[in-house]
Length: 336
Ligand SMILES: Cc1cc2nc3c(=O)[nH]c(=O)nc-3n(C[C@H](O)[C@H](O)[C@H](O)COP(=O)(O)OP(=O)(O)OC[C@H]3O[C@@H](n4cnc5c(N)ncnc54)[C@H](O)[C@@H]3O)c2cc1C
Image (tube, rainbow, N blue to C red):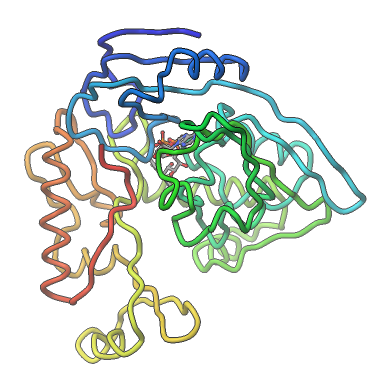
């Protein structure tokens, strides 16, 4: 276990916001969690940090930041058609994707290129290009940090939803995830139904393979998202809003080109980026806070923006979108 005091979190968040924490505790062995319990770390103000790619710090964190660096991918069950992999929370998401591709396990290739650690993947049920983590997560293991009891949640227990799970709602800040168990297919099975991906395959005349899908996804991502380490961001800042069909139809009268995704029943999902773009925010900059010119859903830090400046900009966008479209945008990013 490594403990550092009064430390800048600049290298620990992809928004590249320069704030300090009182203490940063990192550990590589799962057994060390018991020391955290003995030290009563979770009785103090604490934050569990993954790679810091879905977090925006608005002030110094006067508490303990805990980061799991545990590693390991273990095959716990295998049949002719599928494999169950138990993955330690501290594994880098993209390293795990590469492991799956190298071993010809199908199911996660569309999620290539998402920054972060495996332990965070269930928290907001990461998703991209027509696939969500929930499609392959079998279960999640960890500890309730207050009772110190171990848990294993089934996929259903996790209450996965669009960019959400029980870890982001009812059990927010109450669980330390140590492992995620994925159930992956060994049978050839691809999903390129997502329009941008399908178009990419057609345009480049590509054959279907795990490598080609992951590469295509990464190339499309790089063409419209800021690169981690070059421009500060947390990816999409807002969730795509889900509205009633009647509201959507009313909006269509004024904005006939509105993008929508069917959610079943009376609900329709709108593209937050398009709403923001329609109001002229794309490419806007206030100081070092900005809306990424290639994707209006992404707020960026061009250098020395403070978290509060980015939040202020987000609030302006939210009220602008609400005033014009009657649609509430929710932040996808954890604001601390
Ligand atoms: C350029 C860019 C592109 C992105 N693209 C996508 C995308 O396509 N799709 C998508 O869904 N997301 C995307 N994201 C957001 C982000 O990458 C994901 O949400 C990712 O899963 C966050 O992982 P992390 O390890 O950085 O988590 P962090 O940001 O460190 O933490 C996120 C949340 O999870 C909690 N947490 C982390 N680890 C644990 C643990 N072990 N136990 C309990 N709680 C924990 C934290 O307390 C926090 O609340 C993008 C971000 C960036 C910067």
